[in-house]
Amino acid sequence: MAFNLKHLVLILSALLCIAILVVAIFFMYHPFWSNIAKIQLEKQAKDFWEWRLEDDPEFATAASVHIYNDKLEDQSLQAHDARFNRCKQFISDLSQASHNYKF
Image (cartoon, rainbow, N blue to C red; front, side, top):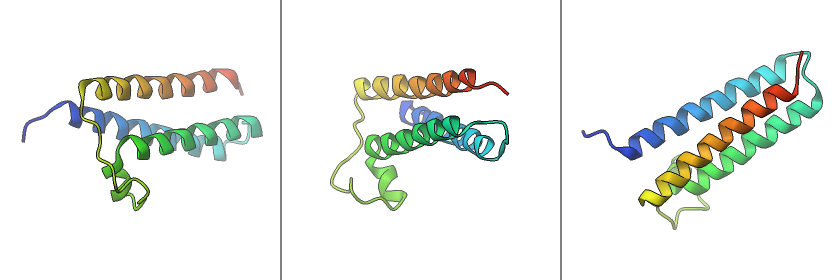
């Protein structure tokens, strides 16, 4: 099986999702974080999840979300570039949020 750009994007998306969940768990159980930080992180996690489902309809179907069953993932180079840039933006937003709230 050949390794291609789609595999790389899927791996990066999965790693980003895991990172968001780890940070979310940290935010939920760490006593020093404010409610504002929790709300901001929950919004970022929700935004990421909704984007992920809309961006990859086959993933949405596999995750038992059937509102995108009539669509297929865009495999164009422009779509891959947009995906990569959106993932970088999510990471940047998480990084910014972690710098805004200190212990």
